[in-house]
Figure 1: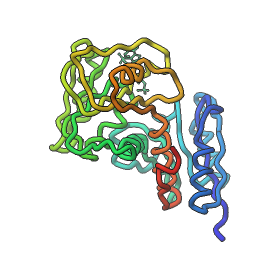
Figure 2: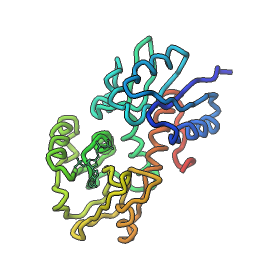
Figure 3: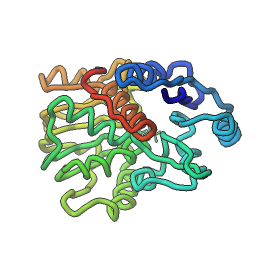
Length: 265
Ligand code: ATR
């Protein structure tokens, strides 16, 4: 029998994290023996805390708010998608080196595909231009999106993000911006990557903007964005599937087995 592996999720705050229950459920399903704990790090103590974890036989760490950029800066080796996201949510050690990946975007892709919403040749509108948007554009492009439009309250932030990411995006995906106050046109999927739901801010969408599917990246919070989707009668989902999707990708990196997302929704 393989010895039990040790994992944790590090953040501040951390007590709300659902990662332990997800990884324990994956372990049970796949027959892997592991422990998965919550790890609180003081602000400014991220590096000290991860070094202590790996020195005490830690096998892998998930990283959550507010440390994903610290994790990005701490790694010796980064995957392509982590480099593009400029944020890391999955850490492990190999040959004494710290490796970092970002599974958030692929988690979103997996969640969307698990619902049977195709991404191939689609026109996607993303609301928001923060870290959440940065992390998903490349994986959405890799999954076959034909057009990705970014709309943000602060328009210059959207144009900066698009200019920054454009060199990494393959030719089959057209990347552009749209002013938030001038939202118009038809999209296959609209994704809310703003933090408006987290802060309870009101959010309205003009009727000139139409869409077939709506995805809210936040979960467990009332969402004006999803209320609008419900009113329009389009299929919608909150971010729980993305949370499960990113956890599955981390589990796969560490354990070499990929649980089936649909078993955990
Ligand atoms: P994250 O890392 O979660 O993306 P962030 O970098 O703070 O967090 O970005 C939050 C995003 O939500 C930004 O795009 C922000 O718009 P601004 O760039 O204009 O600040 C957007 N956002 C937050 N509250 C919003 C609201 N009430 N309406 C519209 N956009 C909002």
